Length: 461
Ligand code: NAP
Ligand code: MG
Image 1: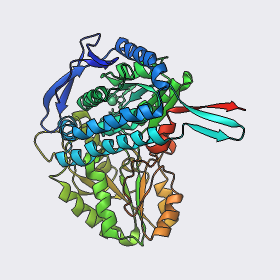
Image 2: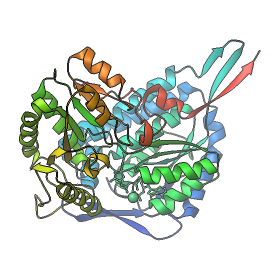
Image 3: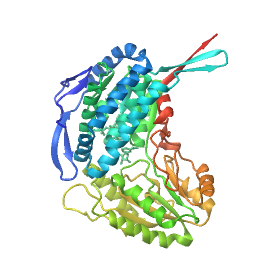
Image 4: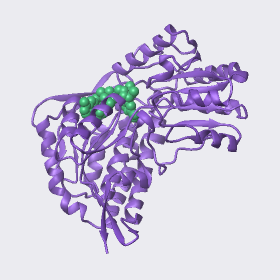
């Protein structure tokens, strides 16, 4: 993937207004791999105007025509799968096999799901004497993070296009090359000029200008709770719709009836994959006091095995942030049983897979999102205690329960969270994804994700 020196605006690569640049760094070796423009508010304005101009024609195309574009987009992404994986590995640092299996494959599956939904979704419903038309919400401002760079883009842009919306995308500054590759694919798929626009830039400049722009009808944001709260407030003041996918501190609840070794091993893998930079990671493992030490020993062994397979964190700032949480855990009196703050390699933003035992629910490391390869193991005495701990954070994005199935399901139904994997249930790209409580507003993926980009019009007869 050769970086573009331009923004993708109104169907073509065009220079940005100013000459500010974003340097793209490979987090594995800390080498500069390219640069992209850092857009100004004037560039955002141009992109929003292009999207507004394109909206009337695009929003009235037949859903089957939009489905054809999404099918073409899916086919192009599939053909460029290796290049996607290499680009994500270069700018995010994830090991190539993980980039292939997840960073490239998952968004391809999501693109396929929306190509199908665009063709099959009933954009019209009956309600008594009314016909309800599901119409596109308008121009979408999409702001995405770096942790699953292509997935986060496709999870917004594919349903937006399926719905008949036009989009301005501001991707994360750390992973703009994946976004440029996506823009090339959209172009190749023949999506009409102005329907999709890519504006690379900094969050507090380009991102904020996009969120505040009066020409945007919906802001769809994924990232930190702090920025999400700010975007929600700005959008609220303007009476604009928002969709927010924010942080998490999910619980992995291992009931006494569980296969302990499997629950612990899958749980550790879940936290360590993508170097712990997964909003839905099960970063709190809850184990009954009778089997607590056994679980701690299994987790320490499993984490140590990850030592040389784990990728770096995305940048120096994230590494510093994660290391400060490890220091905090030690200072709070948690017991370090794997990893720690010692750098595992002399170069790159690496952090050792880290496991803390004797973590209590009130500790900072049990409450705040760390966003690194750090697992906390907490002890519970009975099911009510486990439920109190599981629900005892401001977040509610995901979770897991292990145990006899009916028991596990009953427990999951009492969890304040948007998704729960029962006994290692696999990630499902059409299941609604999103948070309870401070983990967000709205849902992505599948028909629920499509619904975020639609509004209703009722005609009475
Ligand atoms: P972030 O600042 O929330 O970044 C997410 C996106 O929002 C990026 O495109 C960012 O641009 C943009 N942005 C930043 N400030 C903005 C503003 N004032 N107005 C509009 N857009 C803005 O997250 P981060 O700094 O990359 O990571 C910090 C923490 O957020 C992590 O440690 C983690 O806890 C959490 N996080 C969560 C997720 C998730 O999937 N839920 C993903 C990433 C991070 P820039 O790239 O220029 O900053
Ligand atoms: Mg930021």
